[in-house]
Image (spheres, rainbow, N blue to C red):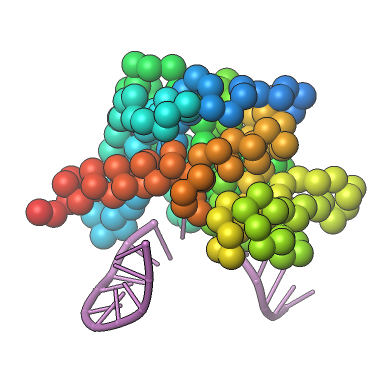
Length: 228
DNA sequence: GCGACAG
DNA sequence: ATCTTGTCGC
C-alpha cells in the first residue's frame, strides 16, 4: 500500500529526512549477536524495464540458517541521488518485509545509517518506519573520511563527524587483508553492538551473510521477472 | 563555482 | 546498482 504513494521531490525528501530523524532511537544497545532472528534486505534494478525487486531473508542468528524468504516487485519511482537512497529503495523493501510471517528481529541494510550527510541514511529511515532495530553495512566510503583500519579481522577505524567530532560509524575489517566494510547505526542499536553483529555475520566473507542471501535472492527474482 | 558522492 | 571474459584459487 506504500509503493503506490506519490514520491516526493528532492527538496521535500530532504526535509522529510530532517523530520523523521528526530524519531531515531540511539540509546539502546540492541539484541545480542547470535541470538534471535537477523534479517537481510537488498534491492536489484532493471532500469530498462523500470523494475525493482526487493528481498528480505530472515536468518536464525545462532546458526545463520535461513528461516524465511520474501520478495516484492515494484516500479522505480525515485532516481539515484546520493543522500536520498532510501526514497529509491524503501517502498519495495517495506513491501518485502510485510510479506514475512516470521519476526525480522534485527535488520541489516546495504548502505549507511547515521554516517549520512543529514545523519539519516537508509538504515535509519527503515528503522524509524518499521520500529525495528537496524544497522547499515556499506561496501564503499560515502561522506566521511577515515584512516585505513589495521589488517586483522576485527580491526577498525572511526568515521568522524567533521563538525562535532562525534564517531558516526566505523570502517571495519571483516576479513584479514580484505577491503573493510563501513558500519553505522540505524535505529535502536549501539555502534559497538552493530560492529559485533557485523563481525558475527561476516565470519567467512567480507559481507554479512544476511546481505549475501538478500543480494542473491533479489537478483534471482529479478531475472525470473525479467528474462529467461 | 568545483569536486565528491551509499545503491 | 549495472554492463561483462577470462582467470586465479580453494
